[in-house]
Length: 124
Ligand SMILES: [Zn+2]
Image 1 (tube, rainbow, N blue to C red):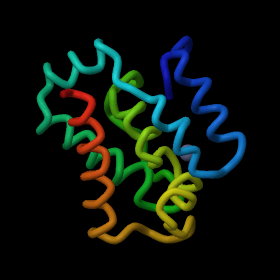
Image 2 (cartoon, helix red, strand yellow):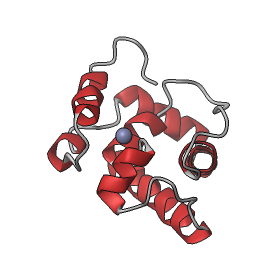
Image 3 (cartoon, rainbow, N blue to C red):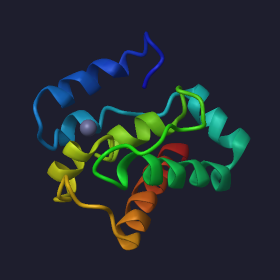
């Protein structure tokens, strides 16, 4: 979830109104200065741990299995939308992952890597 007044929530809404890849809309997601500073502060190793936690708890199984322990305005939020990994419906569109399937360890690693690559590209 976004902080209430984050304008990026409007892009999310339009993406989720109809299920398709929305490649151009996903490209509109960027990390804010504040989010980059947050990543610089916690470091990419800790950030990656948060990404792993997100994948495990929120997208590994057909249904969310748990809550995330970290704050709601985490830079992972724009990262997951930009990467097409915000929800299982979008993953089905963007990566052809069956909505009822549980991710394999290989898929989990792949998606962690995709989020990390996007994040690192934003940090440059
Ligand atoms: Zn989605």
